Image (tube, rainbow, N blue to C red; front, side, top):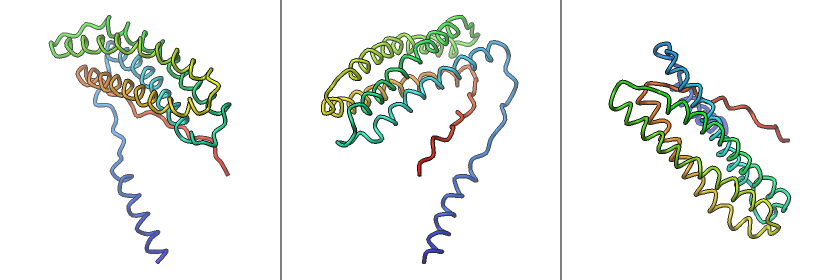
Length: 187
């Protein structure tokens, strides 16, 4: 029975791996597209750190979590938001300087600039809100407010990432998959 179960699990696990193929870029990018790709790589990686910090915070936020642990995780979210402010500004500058010949690219550019204009103050608000939460000395209050604040923040990040993906699709830039480094091993 164990062998059959193990074989079934291995079979199911192997199916998605077989479907994952790495495709090289279709063509080499010109200078204008390469600048966009580089700016959005940095931007994507910085917004991924927000999601990672959120995951670390929410992973073990139970009643047994100490105040120091909660404050450290909450500070991590504030720092991740802070680390994204610069990449958004740099990417905004790159997008604003771009000159796209096609109307749909120009519309995507205008939409991206609008999304960046909306996202920048959200990041600043995130830093302020999560720093204030990290200064809170009530475990209960942090445990009660953090999940709702996190869901709002994640919705903002997802909306911005979707706008970024739409823009990159319209200007024909593909970002490579993010590199995921293994976390610390626990015994």
